[in-house]
Length: 95
View 1 (cartoon, rainbow, N blue to C red):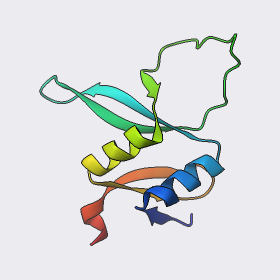
View 2: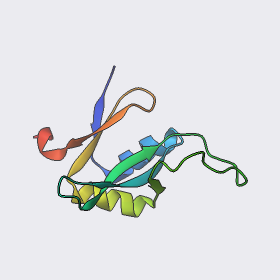
View 3: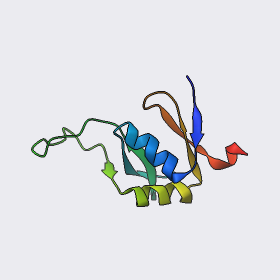
């Protein structure tokens, strides 16, 4: 698989939107029991306005502004591959 790493906001947003993806956040407990935000990207099909999800997966759509701010706060970059394959990596790994 051919991979490359995206750090620039515009590059990340362009890559995701070109694949019909949307930014999302998921609230998850950390080891101390406090809740923290985990970045997600949703590439699933869009539901029709009359369709309801079969279960709550805990993922909430959010704006690009909020998502990119959280990406920066956590000092993460996006390593992308073919199609919709991706993973978050720490920016310090890039040095």
